[in-house]
Image 1 (cartoon, helix red, strand yellow):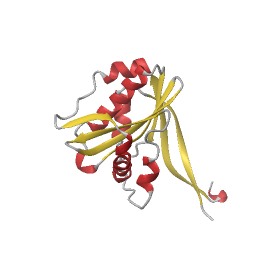
Image 2: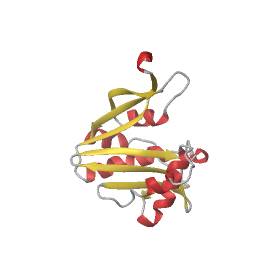
Image 3: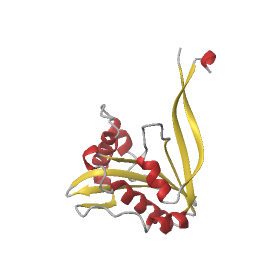
Image 4: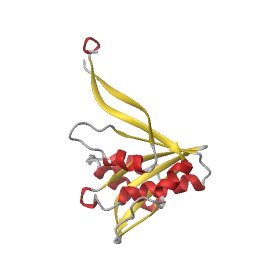
Length: 174
């Protein structure tokens, strides 16, 4: 694709499974450490949710937290957080689309990683998808590369997700 001035970028994986498969797997996933709790995000917590989301991925430029926080409270969206005391340390979102639920936008602050936050957020969203009558859950995450494991991918595979397809992002250069 070099003659088209395109270069291959990040590879993304689309995963999915039946809700009933994910619910069974969620019941066996590891629990949060005892100093953390998971729950849904209220509209008055939107900016904190957006700030944690963007900070977890290193996006700290002005306006990004407000941009993603604007989804909190929208129809068919539900946001989740893990709290350590009164402080949000991990966040995620779920989008309901008929019989399918899309698990999206999940991140944990670096200092809170390795304590079960994303596993708990994954299980909470799966259970809510089942309670809402969804038949399928889907998600997307980056592909693993040599020396670059992806814990999100591994968590989803433990929760019963299967690879549906892989896609490449392409960058055009003038």
